[in-house]
Image 1 (cartoon, one colour):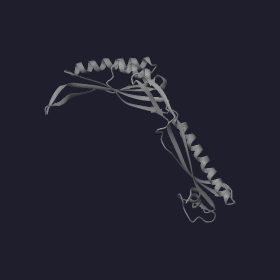
Image 2 (cartoon, helix red, strand yellow):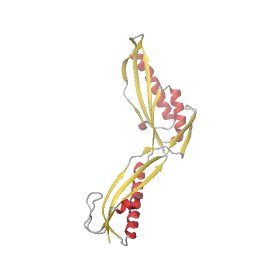
Image 3 (tube, helix red, strand yellow):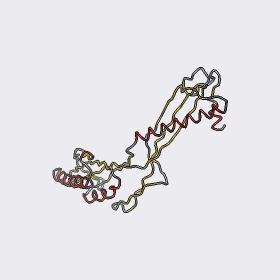
Image 4 (cartoon, one colour):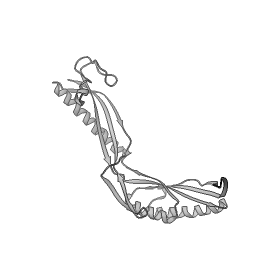
Length: 231
């Protein structure tokens, strides 16, 4: 059964015999689904950094972490990142044990702190990573590439999905010698933006990585269920 035939199963020109998607009107009607996708390249990033030190005393480890966190903050500010785009967590202190020859040995006191940086201009990504490495970060734990205009993209996808559904409904009604009257019901669903592999990518050089950074397009999709009465 092809796609048109499946849609025709949901088309009723008399009192409906099938309820394809919830409540349907008593008069002749057509039920369809519309679908659309919108793609965009990321335009911002969120970097999560770890600064860690293990020393004989917690005070010495904290002093080392504080020194490097100060360098990280200076590096971020040097890339025109404002303080409201930087979050530094509370310091965590714990004994640092390691296993040696089947026994647990105390190596010192471990102090760590997490710093999250929001980067609004991806053109500065490479320079920022270089500066952070020079500042002495231990781990670039997680980098999330984001699309800032999520709500606008979701609205665009919904509009396109509605247009797609209306076009399908008008096609089916016209093939059976009828016309669309009024919209009876509409249910909509938009999916969050999800990273998706794509051949069309944005490339930026990051010296610290010594390789190009590839950013795949991200997609937001929308699906609507429409019921039109027929004239």
